[in-house]
Image 1 (cartoon, rainbow, N blue to C red):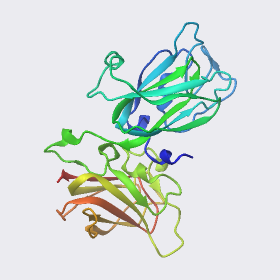
Image 2 (spheres, helix red, strand yellow):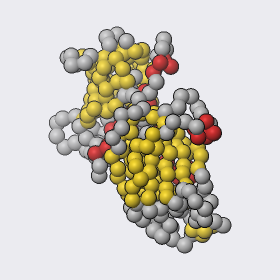
Image 3 (cartoon, rainbow, N blue to C red):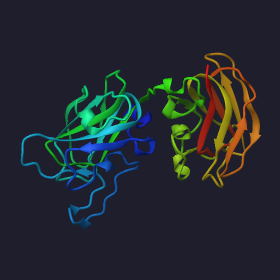
Image 4 (cartoon, helix red, strand yellow):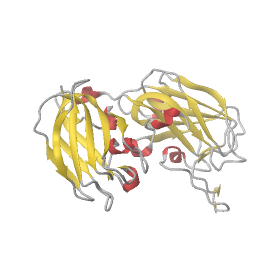
Length: 315
């Protein structure tokens, strides 16, 4: 698996991504491109449009040109790699694809995006049927939308757009915000264990629908404890910590401790060793008013967290 896949999928539906336009979706809907999870398939399940696919599929093109889909990134940022997945498309996959990107402020319509300045971030590449294709992207631009082109037609199950979140925090001038939110540019810089689920889930948008959408560690068999470290969206002062163990019924930590540091300075307590309850959203006022750039959450001894929210103000 390519290293860039450890970065968040900027286009994921659960992060606010959406497929807002496509040249055609005669056989299977465009929205499938950004669904979470692996594509599903059941042979010989036919609807009015033919075999049912968990992906985007266009009609057989009888005119010049190629098909395309425009995706709004839920998390604007710099793209480090894309995954084009043709899972289950064996006799109807496109032989080639490319990806373009643009940056447009606000909430542009498909018509407005048609006149945007698009940059090719992945030149035309070869595809195989029923396969995941990983392509690194070498472009430092900040983008809000991508356009997936397939030549000339066919089916693609998923598009993953992995990268680094680069939000516009000027919207929060004079306001408080969640300094630990992935959507605001925070990132997990380390954790002790990610056996069951990825650590960046803990700072993902929205609420976890089940325990796999949070961060969960293996069971510890020693005297230590598990931890996760987050680089905040910006240097700021934390006023309120939300520690959510929702969906973690028998695998929630017994307690938590939060520490912060400013740059490369020493760690200091934001929240002392504090008991947690299973399947519960906890809220704790933070009394220490010192600016921090990083926060470390130690959980005792192991388990999982659905979400970590650290509300405060940019310093």
